[in-house]
Amino acid sequence: MDWLEPVLTLLMLIALEAVLGIDNLLYIAIESGRVPLKDQARVQRIGIVGAVVMRLILLLVLVQLIAVFQTPLFHVDWGSAVQGHFNGHSLIALVGGGFIVYTAVKEVWHILAHDLSREEGGGMNRKPAAAIGAIALMNVVFSFDSVLTAIALTDVLWVMASAIVVSGLIMLWLANRVSAFLKKNRAYEVLGLFILLIVGIMLLSEGGHLAHLELFGGSVQPLNKTTFYFVVTVLILVDLVQSKYQRKLGSND
Figure 1 (tube, rainbow, N blue to C red):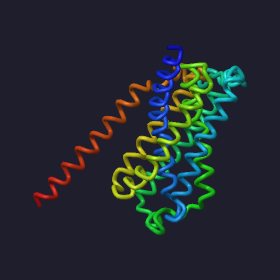
Figure 2 (cartoon, one colour; figure 1 turned 90 degrees about the vertical axis):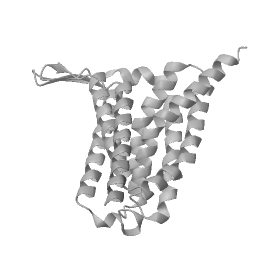
Figure 3 (cartoon, rainbow, N blue to C red; figure 1 turned 180 degrees about the vertical axis):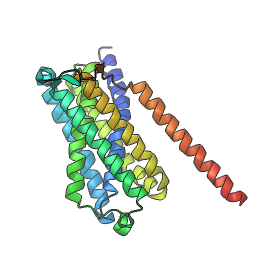
């Protein structure tokens, strides 16, 4: 029965990696929706394959060099305003979280401004290379959580690698469905952007916590994952109820 424990761990890791990959998949779906229709499927495939490759590379690197990413790189001491000890992990979380917040706010602004160029060619006519570059950057950020979760659960390399590959295949299977759903239900794109905004805030709080960051005497606390999933669930339920209520109002007119 020596095989039972690794198999159970593998199944648990696949489930966790799939859940952790949802925000990555959502980002890829939204970012690929900004390129012309003829390039969207290719950008999605490259983004997801890149995510899997990045996770595998990070897995091999972190298994050997995890202490390097936890070693303090520099210290900031600006009196009572800002204090912190930054390492590689905290910087990646802070930069990635900031970029996600910027991206979400920018896209919401485009929606509010009713940028008609979004409708031409099925997207914003963004160059595929630019979209792939943005996805690659985010893959680094999302991969850290994914790989660190795997390392925390097991030290068996083949189990971790298998879970990452299988979760990648699940992402490939879901990619077209998520993208098609967002195209048919454009209102849910706003919901997706606000979920990304919360993901960015969560990463910023995690990076600040890892850096022991203190702002004006108060320490930055990480946003609890349970709280994150609760907030996302409430957002989805509110959106669904509001959509159904609007349809009823429309039918009564």
